[in-house]
Amino acid sequence: MKISEYITRAWVLFTAWLTLLFGVADSAFADAPEQDRLNIVSIVTDDQALWTLSCYGSTESQTPNLDRIAAEGARFSNAFVATPVCSPSRATFFTGRYGTQLGITDYIDKADEEVGIGLPPDTVTWPAVLQRNGYATALVGKWHLGRIPASLPERFGFDRFFGFLGSGALPITPVFDFPDGPRKLVGCTADLITDEALAFIKDKREQPFALCMQFREPHEPYGPMPEVDTQALAALDPALPDAPGLDAAQIKRWRREYYTAVHAIDRNVGRIIAALEQHGLWNKTVIVFTSDHGYNIGEHTVHGKGNATWVAAGLKGPRRPNLWDSSLRVPLLVRWPGVGKPGTVIEDVVSNVDMFASVLGMLGIEAPGDWKQEGVDFSPRLRGQAQPSRDTLFAQYDLHNLGFARMRAARNAHWKLVRHFESHLLDELYDLSADPGENHNLIQWNMPDKLTPEQKAARAEMDRKLRVWMESISDPLVKQT
Image (tube, rainbow, N blue to C red; front, side, top):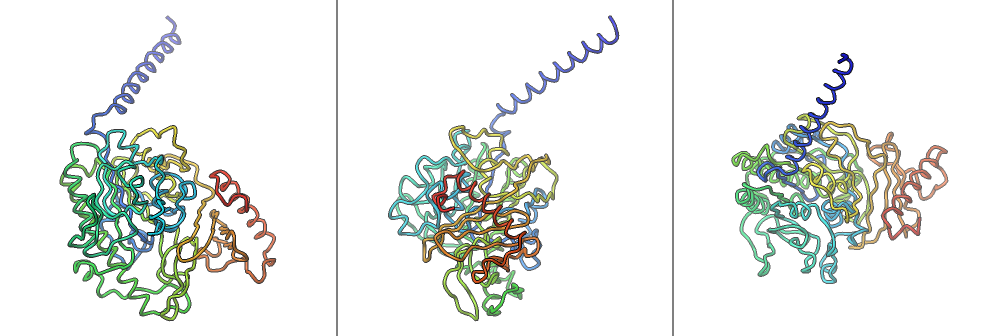
């Protein structure tokens, strides 16, 4: 036999052996015993800005447990939400669809609940997909996606629910919803939610589980909080945002109370970490931490999120609907045991519309073929693999509670266009390279024709991209583009 033939045959045998080996490995992974499958703990806070975490550069907030997740996992520096208010953002987080696709475009208030607004009955959520694949599932805390029977958490993939169905609860002695009716509980809401989460972890520690923790903190009212949290921030003298006309004492008080609520979140995240370690699950559990949208306490001279109110000279004015980055940008931390380099910072632009695909991607669960979702699976980036970054981010908000607005936005690294449909002379264009804080709208209502040729071209191109995106999701405003 010639040497070349011998080498060829040897190579064929070797590659056949590799195919067999990795084929068996893939099959073994797909059919892995339940105890070898990763769990997931998803933690979503309410109204938490990026600037409240020390791992994002805060020198005022104290978040050692969240910082640990970032240090042992990945921190996303450009994570956004699709809508900067609670209900539509939470719907997007669970489904991978935009609010207009689900009929939820503003926060669900009592009037909306009475007419049955909530997640449509045929909606698929990623917890439901995990439930079908053998995961024990629970949601503890805030739901805010409908309270009629067809919209309850149990209809969308949760074996267990403990918390409140509506928009909020008090930070102390909250009223939670139970099958036999509402009931007032004694204690700090964040602690009560975490107590239930710990009980679920202990109960389901022998099988794969998906736990969704939905804190009400740091939503208004920011307090009262337990003394352990209050004392940690009692001496803080918060810095003021760079905005005109603010009442310094008022803004400092709000920000100190806000940081105190964040401290309660971090303290309870520490309790979750300790329990996972105690049960031997810390390296068997994916941790995802984020918020339902950003927040402003003085930024842009407003207080709140996408439906913020003006605040100046100690007074609160009318609502200022907005799609500023400060309302859309959120913290996003992911600790995926054994995957990726600890302390990774991912600069790719991601949206909470990506969460459906990404959770399933991290857990190795195939997405259902009959559910069209709009997100991109970012789990390859967590593995350190190259992945095309999102060129343009899109956002939407239709305000109907205590105001009116029909807003859509397209954003890339350089430009951001905000369209105000059904309103006149309110469109916004920002040059983010020169004005990252979005303080100077280039489309001035009294001088609409003063854009430079470059700015006009950018406006036209962003408007074109916005129109294409709106058509792709069958946006009800698409005829007005």
